View 1 (cartoon, chains in turn yellow, blue):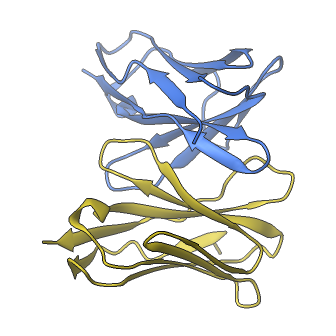
View 2 (view 1 turned 60 degrees about the vertical axis):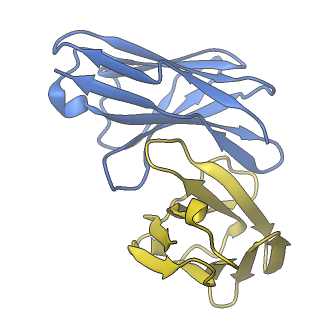
Length: 111
Length: 114
């Protein structure tokens, strides 16, 4: 079993839609949960991170972690064409530097 | 957020030659840096962990004699692809963790071996 599972998509939505991106993980030692956005031919950009369970909101983006079910979500409200990118979830353990990446979900927001 | 740079952003080389890629943390120090490669439409694959002042740690299946890593200072790590072959053509990305838990990526280097 992979450490992190993520539906690769592709996912296409119309502009203004609410997008839900999800990951599951198997390692209960993960405590930090990162979301990265990667545009084509660019390095990943840190979008948001959360610690342990709960929600975190930043503008149109909301990250949600449910440690009991080992489920990570990223919600994008009022999606824009500029949100079209690949989104990668990446949890990590406390005290460790390495991240465990999901495969990434490719999102296209259609104007 | 913090800034990590990579140089060059794009390089073409002939088969059999070596190519060096630099990764710099511009506004913070990093005792550890990571090197990834990414093929089109695929996720990041960790190649090795670069450690300042000591040897790099390579992931299983990655040839350490082919991918030489040197972590010369707290802000610079280099990856040298030796005797490059067309199958080494890929997108190489470095990252550097910043305390307490963030990690920042470079913009990537596109290597094409002809």
